[in-house]
Every structure is written in C-alpha cells, then in structure tokens.
Length: 336
Image 1 (tube, rainbow, N blue to C red):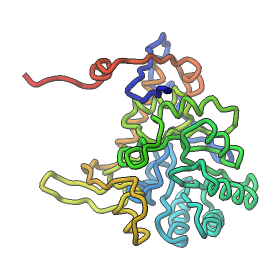
Image 2 (image 1 turned 90 degrees about the horizontal axis):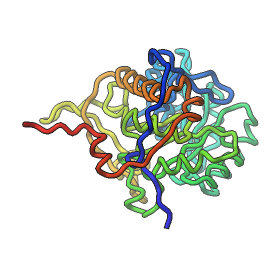
Image 3 (image 1 turned 180 degrees about the vertical axis):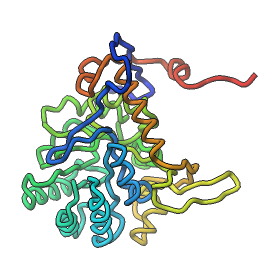
Image 4 (image 1 turned 45 degrees about the vertical axis):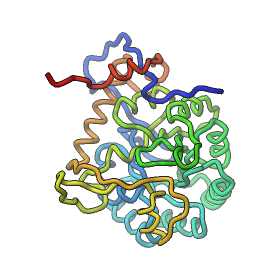
C-alpha cells in the first residue's frame, strides 16, 4: 500500500540566503490572457467566502477572487459588472449541469476575467463535456480554471480537455467531509507533489487543507503555482453574511457548499452531504489577514534564499518529520 504525505509530515530545510529584506521577494504569478497578480492567493467560490466585497479586497491586496455560483445568472453577472467597473479582475464559478453554458456566456459578455468549472470530483465525464464545450465556444479567448482533482492522471486529463489552471485537492478542506463520507481522497500535499510531475502547461492551484502561510509555502515548494483558500478568510468583514452576536463573542457563518445548510439554501433539498457548517470568530478586515499571509509567504521563500516562486521551487529541500517533530513545530508553551 502506498504512503502519502500531508502538510504536517514535512518541513522545509533552511538554506543559505543573501536576501536582506522580504521586500526583495517577488511572489507574483501570471494567468494566461490576464495580467500579473502580486499575491499567489485565490479566494474560494463559496457563498460564505467570496462575494463582491471579498473579490474587491483580495484584488486590492494583489490576489484574485472567484465568485460563488449559488445565485441566479443575472445576480452573478451583476456582481461581475460591479467588480470589474472598479478596475478589479475577478473569476466566477460555474457548474456542469443544465444551463452551465448559458451562465458562462452571460459572464463572458459582462467581462469576467476567467471562468472556474467548480465540481467536487473534477475527473469526470461531465467536466470533460463542459470543458470541451467551453473551449469550442470561446476558443482561447478566456482563461478556464477547473477542478478538483487529486491525481496526475486527473490533472493531465483536465489540461487536455481545455483547462488553463487546475484545482488540486479532494477532501482536505476544514469544512469538507468527503473523506469521512466516501473514504476517498489523497492528502493535499501529496496530490500537489504528484500533479507537479505533469508535462502539461496548466497552472497548479493548491486547494484544501491549507491552514496557515507555512502550509502555503510548502504547497508552493511542492509545485503549486498559487493557492486557493476559504477558511483562512472566513469570519472577516468582507465575507458574505451578517456578524452574529453570541455569548462567546462575535461570529460569522462559514459553511461547505455540500453541507446540509448550504444545499437547503440554494437547492431546497439535500442529496449527498460532504460538508459541514460552523460559526467562526469574527476577524475584522481581510486586508490584515492577507497582509500577514503575504509576509509569511515572502519570509518562507527567503529562508530558502529564493527571490521568486520559480527559484524557490528549484531550491527548496524538504525533510519528513516525526509526529514529535510536528508537535515541536507548533507553539507549545505551557502555563506555569
């Protein structure tokens, strides 16, 4: 039986560096047919993560957002118009069911920066049909992100079907229960390492199980071009939803889109439950969160003496740590 590595199984080895300041480190990335982005972070297309405010805020910070698809075509298109009219790039999620092409065409017509084919199990015939249909419709005129996959074969197939960037990771998200419900999945770090062996030209988007900037740095070292996050942005001012006043303090709702609550809200029924809903602590403006994540990523690259993501991936060295090492790696001060 094969073994697979998770983020806690690995540490990166500090190396000689001549970098005097984190400001010397360039964390930018480019997406085909789009401008260069300064921060390799994409916000997840969840209804408690990315709406108009989050998309604008993450764009201002140098990253890019992907609008959720759990609304009408008209509502989603209006959100795109409001965001792009302020000079921001934004992606928008679409599904693969009936009406996906109508939604895609409406989004393209109002100037969406890229489309995101958003499916839990992306290595599927329905995703192939959607990608091939989108490519036949738009040609190379629009960037298409798709996923999720967990294997190199899945990554290569989505690239061959027309995806420009591919979300890698199944079941690793903080509010995802796919592995519990179905028994399927691969630790996200292992999936990144496997998929990074591709000879296709698609970008690798690490998605799931990323809890901090250290995990982001490990994902980039393993071969990711950028990272998609949800829980790291949850609870901030810019996420959709009201701030709740509870006995434990201010909270906001954060839910998986395959949770019972989300399915009832958007479909009026529940099929397979592969997510949960929680309230998380209110965290204030997302600008501060994104700033701290960016600082952590630049620091991580500097520890390997790298001034860019590409240089970092060529220099990074990893070691496997024991469970005791993982405990030592966390903050572990004890009260006296």
